Length: 140
Picture 1 (spheres, helix red, strand yellow):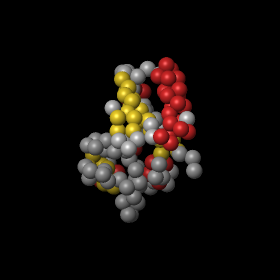
Picture 2 (cartoon, helix red, strand yellow):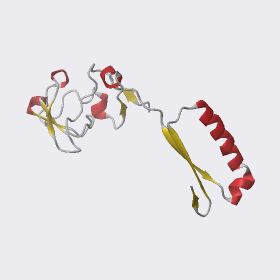
Picture 3 (cartoon, one colour):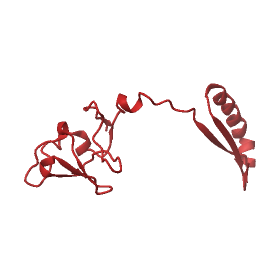
Picture 4 (spheres, one colour):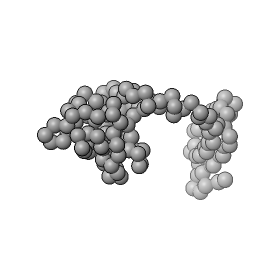
């Protein structure tokens, strides 16, 4: 199956105000859907007006089959512009673990990994990187 993209609200997806969990099929809806209850931390929070809807006799949202985040196990929530506008991520740090056992050396694996690392390090901007080698023990 294709992962559905849920990008309907300009403020981003509705989330628990306590643990920041995304709405999902297991949230509980209360007070005519004016409040939501997180299935992860059990916190109750106000539901934004544009996300409220009617509840049926079983207190289930009447739109649950139309909202992908409420009827699928996996959805993609793109980050809203406000989330990323002042975000300047630092270059990543990396740790490379290389198998230097006799078999790895004899097969050419170590030489290939070292060549690939040289290419990667020349192309990427890491803030820091480390190399750990191992065979029967770990070498720093």
